[in-house]
Length: 170
Image 1: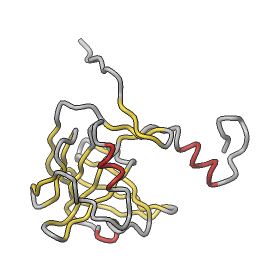
Image 2 (image 1 turned 135 degrees about the vertical axis):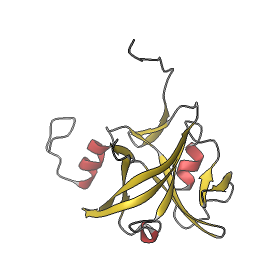
Image 3 (image 1 turned 90 degrees about the vertical axis):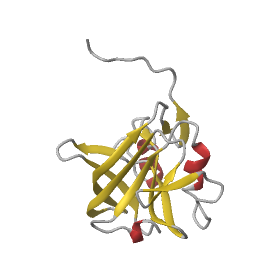
Image 4 (image 1 turned 180 degrees about the vertical axis):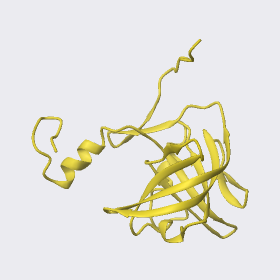
């Protein structure tokens, strides 16, 4: 593997620097209800299949949320809008009540964060241990989108997109 400077990537920090070049959308995965609710920020959410509608994301081994996920678990997926950097940071912080000071409601028996770009519910299908993470696939059950711009994570920082022009083909 080679770094941007043309030198071999030999350390974990080199690999992190390479991965930081990949911009990603930011989402909060949620489960549970009432006092037993959990959520975590992920930067690895991706579309996987149209037929059937599947998505995928990865979670670090040892994650408190990952410990609560198994095949057939129903999850909430809150795709964050560009104004939700504080929520992304909050749900990435261990040892705190991540829902405190976060506007949310319960929908489809799952925590839904207010003001997101998109809200989905999905059923976990596969958990594949790979390296220091677990790759999860999930079948989309329900989805809604709003007219907002996404929160992007790139070069270890949150970013907003500039003006977006429609590129729809005629």
